[in-house]
Image 1 (tube, rainbow, N blue to C red):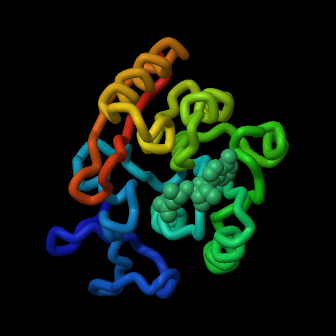
Image 2 (spheres, helix red, strand yellow):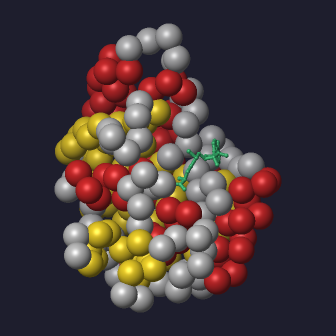
Length: 200
Ligand code: SAM
């Protein structure tokens, strides 16, 4: 990924959400994007030209737009109508973003559109984040890599986030994944952990 004077950037047309520009590149702010925070930790998978990405929980396309600056195609799934409108605008301006108005708990709804992917990225902040991940893992290539952005408070607000993270890791391992990294995203995003996995 590109850094200019130590600042993470992406190479695309600016003005998507009011992001700063630096020497012609779009500044990718770790306080606004969990994936950018993960890049700062040094544990994020490389985003490479030619990669195909399935992105669950696209919201208004902020992070999606930066990912699209680096890779070949981003299939971006979002189920809330309001952010979907912004995502459609991002897709209008970036020809490699395929916006999908769909529910990540029901991947059969977009299975006919989405191809096999190199990177599965999930940021849905739902109680059953592992269940959603497992359902969508069918799209991941054997050689693929996946990132689950775990918001422990969305799983159970009363329980210890560290315990929920441990349980999530165990569930992913039981589901046939090898957990490469578990990173807290402090100070950029509190109560979030990024779990980076590959297939075993
Ligand atoms: N990834 C975004 C970013 O970095 O810009 C932020 C994502 S926000 C934390 C979570 C998003 O997931 C929300 O927009 C929400 O509507 C969406 N979401 C939650 N459950 C979903 C589901 N089952 N299917 C699709 N989208 C979902």
